[in-house]
Length: 285
Image (cartoon, rainbow, N blue to C red):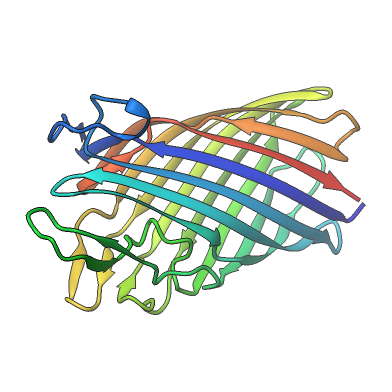
């Protein structure tokens, strides 16, 4: 069964404001959506549904593609109230995975090479009336709200898997990405490093896992003004417990995980989600 098709959904509700390593207090009174009073004057909600298709050419080589559908929303009431959202196809990624070593009961290693393509829109605008004004102003939506980044992004990753007893395994991965070019509205995302280290255990059809994730991202650049974008970049650490269920020996697999934030140190003031949700299903054929 060399083919694998997957569908993965992620939900992230960034309803806190952070600066450095500190959570911010409320900046000004407001009434956010759904009557959730007492929150901060800004909120971002991110949802992504990714369709994946891959093919095992052999025991050591797999290639594939992932196609995301993105829906991002933002509410804010700082100087003016606004609610806007973007939805659509995001940046499609093509990838290849090659096992440098893949033997039973061994420390097995692999390399991933991927390329994220600028297929998602990155130049959407919105209209608003600034505080104290009557005329409507048009502005570009924030880069993190857009469905895509508008850049070509080469990605390289190294990983390992190692049995650690009956039904138990250890795994780890380090991934580096370096976006190229500047998008249509003058922004350039900078390089980032993402690593994880974890362990999983299988109980036949069921399994559980836990892993620590670390992300370091540089400032974005605003090439129009020649400056860093202040509320971007930083580092984050979270712990991600998960579980899976496979009723047919690995042909069908259902997964779920809940990354929980442990530490952050960010540039300027940013929105933050203390937890998020990932669920997925895959099928081999």
